[in-house]
Length: 114
Image (cartoon, rainbow, N blue to C red; front, side, top):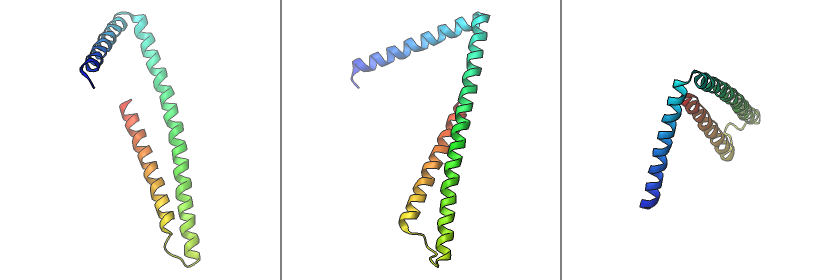
């Protein structure tokens, strides 16, 4: 990043800070704006909560499908007398479980931030 871009970045950050502060002061001093802002925040939080719940439900269903499939594969292999799953199946399941775990961690972090 060259010095001109750095200066522009810092200047923009300064302007954002000043603008946010001015908006906050206007909102705090005007009861009508304050009520509107609080209402907006509550609505936004409700919408985000609903989105997170839906995403969590879909993720749970995907995880259940993966685990059910894994159990079905293992039970089928035991019935055939083969007690060890193939390396490829194990790798795929481990990869899918890792992805789901990362998604759950991401959702938790998102919830904690809001």
